[in-house]
Image: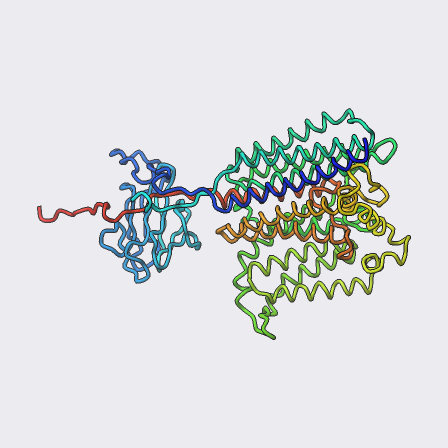
Length: 159
Length: 458
């Protein structure tokens, strides 16, 4: 090949190498902003919100969580049934599980039983909801093995 | 009122963009391979279709694995890694062609690449979530330290190129430090998540720097002694620096206290000075760094690399048209010098830039991550990669004393390549966990909540 052809090939290759870097950077740039989704466009997680009414004949297997119970605290032993699908936890009178604890918000958290599992969600409380010592920021799956702390009260699922 | 609807940002999956970048990277690497053949022998080698086929297949499998198991993973890391691996393969092939008859280094490297991608696919499909790793802190840490010190076992470790960092089992040799790098990054991350409060909160203040308590110095002293042991008995400055640097950096990141970084730097400086005074191999490295032209025979490798890069200049000699074979070990330690000679400063800068992109994405994953273990693990892995690239390319270009580290993804050698593919897999796993949308529950509207009425007094 002639000198000039070699030079052109060399420069074109280096230019393409840098073009790769520029395209990777532009991908990173567009990635910064993500995709904006309106709440109304978001897929509605129907099964989480309205669980099917539980059958009258209890068909639950053994070992499935049935109640959400206070395991430590001055109200230890108090529990709420998961059969209704949703348990509201807080100091307010309309909660299914009313905690008498100064560190608990009026409507503190809720437990949602869905076919895929049982979730706990913090409802913007002042002091937060902790699952196994970690403050949760998003709905979190809990099982029989997890302990939940709300204020000074420890709670857990019981079969 | 539609405009008033709350707006949420959901990261996109971006798998299509990743595929486009992978095709671009593959095209660049295979084009470079063909250019080497054309420029050296004047025709495409008969093996080229096979090389192209295997490379494309391997890249496609990696992409499919990511698309299947980690749909939200970062789109830039995989194409960058494929391009670096491809460029390394091209340079090794180019150095193969210098010998008459040509060597088989590139074929060997291609097999290692396939194994590396296999490990990557295993990590991506089988592990899929980095959090279970947190449960095995001490097992993984112990395994890492044992691997690190394994070459010192008599009969198992072998000495190559003046450093005792290889173990030999039958015909196969293996550099366990590379695997130890991954294991120790995991172990440090989960250890520091547990212990960071104690390391961060207790201590006293001297000259505006928070110093830790004497009784908390245990782990840093143990790591210091281990890295000194590597320096003294394995005679490997690079591995020693890499591990100690990784530990100190993760300590600093997890505790947010500059005292640890200052202390670590002082300890390492003391160790390095001790090494300089007592060991001839350290003195020779420093001599090659400060004044290579004083002794042509002893510092031949560094001098040849300098002349190669000088000849390459801004645009390089062109692929296949330089003489990178004059530098000893051009295919492993000095592959950056070979790139600098044939692709010039423009090409070497591009390669460093691609490493920079991978590291930047890794740190970005760490910033986005909401749980401390993933945060520290992503920081540790990307920092280790950055430190390794900085140390070896800095050594080759005489910014630092030369250390015998490998250039990640490019140097010839199986252990380094496979372990770095595992690092890439782990980074993608963390990025998928970070970027995937959280499980959503529709916000609660108090006005629509039904309050149950208790009917009293029937």
